[in-house]
Amino acid sequence: MSFNGSYTWSRERLKNQYLNPQDTELNEYISPNERPNRFTLSTIYELPFGKGRQFGSSWNSVVNAIFGGWQMQGIFERQSGEPLVLPNMYYNGDITQLKSDYTNKNVNFGRFGIDRPGWDISGFNIGGVVPGVQNNFASGSALTLRNLPFTTDNLRNQRFLKFDMGLSKNFRIGEGKKLQIRMDAINALNTPYFSSPNVTPSNASFGFTTAPVRQPPRDIQLAARFTF
Image (cartoon, rainbow, N blue to C red; front, side, top):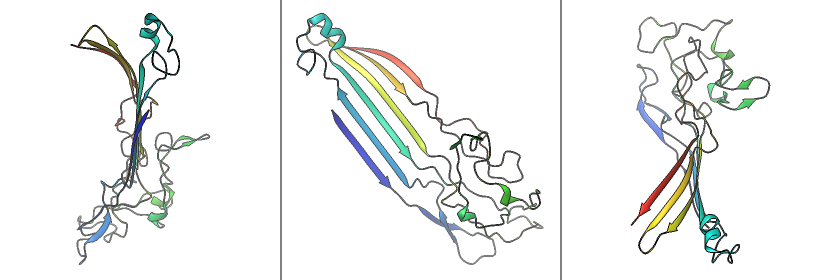
């Protein structure tokens, strides 16, 4: 059995645009490409069955050919979600304290971001009405000065999670010839990875993801390879 794992912590900040066009200092904010935490683990395990192994060392050639010499592989990936890029909008509190529960499940209300908004949207309206706030560069907007950051650490897309696994066996056929059969399960846990949610308060889909998932569903593949 062998393992290969890695962990990466990263921090990426940008300072390349003004929060408001009349500002004299560039605004520093979290890069939309930042993924603070990433962990990967891969493993290969030769199953202990068959001749020369812990179990089945006395098997005859037919039984050993069927049940012996199998190998399992697995790859696990997990990383933080990307920060959501916020437009100029009204919010009646501290936006940095608003936390997204995107794709987490609530037994009473379903999945956040799918069955209900991914965060509390009540602070983005006044008396149930979303104020008409336009882009900073549009003249005559209802709110001319922006005080919300472009990104905040607590409002992120869901984390990326993926687990692939495989099972394979090699058969020797005479000298210099080998047959490998294998089964691979891509996204074996069938974990969805949704596109970023809508971040426009005046949109009926605000807080929901309406785009297709960015990770395909579980895919099981069978293959054979003959080497000579």
